Length: 426
Image (cartoon, rainbow, N blue to C red; front, side, top):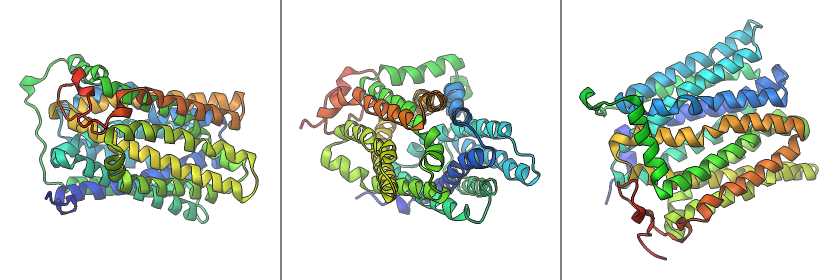
């Protein structure tokens, strides 16, 4: 029997680091929109720009970042990315205390943090397969999703409480501290990842092309990426407008926004704990399209809340948040583990960067689209557009061999059409 990853020292350090990082991210995820809306009186369009800048780096530099990460020690990339994010964020409370905070500064900080996050995310997903055995990847990703979900539970809830006594800009100090704590624990990992010999390097353009080719030419990966990218595009519309929708359209308190986000985190925690079992019962392949459909269905509860009154609004918001987060986490655990098993170790950074270039590259577009639609159509109609798009996003995986597959292939041939054949029919 394989020993539990909780007995794996280096994995524990990574798990603690991820938890600290995610807590900080969740706090700023609530605090930054509140700063923009409540302190700087941001419009829907300005919120769209802010959301776009948070993720624009994935579109602009993810591909070369993947090639660079494959050339560097991933542990160092993780530490340096954490430090850069902490230093950028701490400028917000400083400027607030000096009465010098502007929307332009929020834009700049969002762009810097987004750039560092590209390097962190690519290195992080490429680092895990070097720490644990391939057979432990699903378990490892599940535990790391628990880390994310725990942070999602603690972060917004903590933020909601602290918003009662502290100004939103001051809460960003918690995020900076989380990133520094993450850097400390990543630095404690003893495993030394191997850097390819310089003599094996080729032109950056060639190495980038290998990563893109791996993703685009594989018949299952390209469908998964199409689903994820489209889902993120329309999901970003909801993310852009959520604070305005809850605080202005529905007239609910800032602490209620924290409650809704905390409820979603609880759904994510449930997803992290149940993903592996769900995949075993339903089948790995089938889990991907089924969870993708679930994401769109649960998302409909958010705009539906505008059609009811009183406590029913909060019930629908909380229920939708729980359901969406559960579906997203189950989907991510299964498809990320599949990608990591399938990809050769030397190509992991470029593969992950290529995937992120596509699936996160749609998010700034979605953020801007959310701002435009929220201004032109109104917040509630824009949210219904997002729901329709999220349901359509499931089609690439729903109308694919995945729905008839129980087990996903575990092969290194990125272009083989045989990879679509189910390992276990049924």
